[in-house]
Image (cartoon, rainbow, N blue to C red; front, side, top):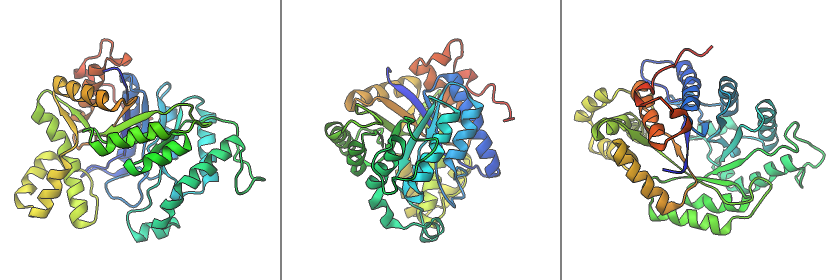
Amino acid sequence: MTFKLSVLDRSRTRQGHDPGEALRDTVRFARRAEELGYHRFWVSEHHSVPGVAGSAPTVLAAAVAAATSRIRVGTGGVMLPNHRTLVVAEQFGVLESLFPGRIDMGLGRSVGFTDGIRRALGTDKEAMADFGDQLTELAAYFTGGPRPHPEVHARPAEGLRVPAFVLAGDSGADLAASAGAALVIGGLQGEDRTLAAVDRYRTAFRPSAWRRHPYVVLAGNVAVAGTTEAARRLLIPEAWALAHSRTHGVFPPLAPAEEIETLLAGASERERGFYEAGLRGHVFGTEDEVAAALDALIARSGADELLVTTSSYDREALLDSYGRLAALAGLPGQAGAGPERAGAGLGRVA
């Protein structure tokens, strides 16, 4: 395994634990990811979601960067339709000025999940269509290029070079290519549509102030444990939360796997169908199984980096999984630190 490994943590709340604890867990997790040798640590943007505490990614990224010293820190991502490009440029300009050479600007085009959230954010579904123009305008605030308000300067962003990453499905790969940004795309099973989008991105890529060459990051869940079944159980809480959101309209905090297995006995056929779908499309298993799957994936896709997005209720098992994956990849932080130490050293955030 010769590709870069990074982490996206959504600050998932857990049943019986408050959102503040989820945010503090994120900062502790970032410290451990740095110890293990992961390349980046990203945080996300979600609004009015009971199961996610990460609603202000640039604020949380600042806390993560302040608590670490080497790992790159960024957003996966800031959703541009929810924000003014000037404000986004200023926020990342501040981050890059405080933590030079360590900040990534991950950008997405999603809007709120419901009409109420979108109204509260002052946007609507149609705003997603302007994403390409927003990317161009945002870049201009960093470069001093043409923009709608040439007399306005995004300080301290102007003149800085913060790497830009576009979070996209297969249809968004063209936008990343046109913007000259790195592409972050889900698809750890190497489906034909994902691979075709990656090829299309590389072919259409236009060099920019952000990046001279195409760069592909594959994102998704990876779980590693002593047995295949133990790794699969790590994925159960997220799969159940997804099924619940599809059938009840609310994405809940993560519940323990053993509780979910009890609930499944009384689940509806529709709920069970969504749950089983939520368990597909991930990489999980023992070290040997995961190594074989990821090596094959990188060979098929030619990806430059893997962004691991796994969440679970059992924090110790989750951290053990990330530790095992780091050891499997031979990350530099693994010298003398086997998987059994993956949950060690997680003191309280000061």
